Image (cartoon, rainbow, N blue to C red; front, side, top):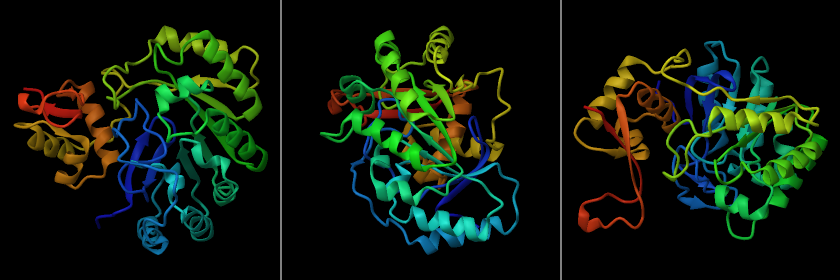
Length: 327
């Protein structure tokens, strides 16, 4: 059966074997992060909607989980911000009632955690994986590009308020963009915020797949280890670096040969964006993103990036990241 809202299970660097649940249309998000692997936000919004009937999503979950698959987590994620879905509480309630043997994880950019209603709706999750990439407003705007007038202070206060009421695990992600938020001053501000938030774990991350902006590059191992040492000094919270994939480390590759063959056929003669490939192959964009990462590691796919200033008279496509098969 082809599912509309489920993808995977996939092998996740952070959550093991994870069944993804996506109830947000493509790129509805309050942020437009420079490192986002699914590219620029098409709908920059803080408004929450019932994008799809909760019964539709619950039915898919019931069908899939009836086979009793072995999962580490059912994970709310996708190509947009999951907390924008106003029915998220109904999905959580359904899973806890009908499938209590499975743990629920939520990956969020933290923006809506400053809303009391949102906090209450997600209290029954087992693990929340929120983001905090900056505390200074100028750095926050450079990296996360929020909707106008949203403050980094509001993001931090939302995380602090959520910690006070949430009894599950909070694994706080800090995404490092070299040259922007890796300064001593900004890392110290992030550390002070982490002390107030009191998460169970801090995870330092860096670019692993092409981001929205081509100037974003991975942080070096030395840089990540230096930041890990800075954050660990004086924090009671464990701080770890999220392992990066490499050509010598492909055990997490859950991509089937059939999917790779489909991608090769789609890209052999023409470059295409992530969204276009997903639509053409009818593959969920998150699964496709994982497959393309593996193909990039293997050197079988290459990336071309075009900016908004590129002249269409030169035959360039609209701005964005495009993939092509490497011949």
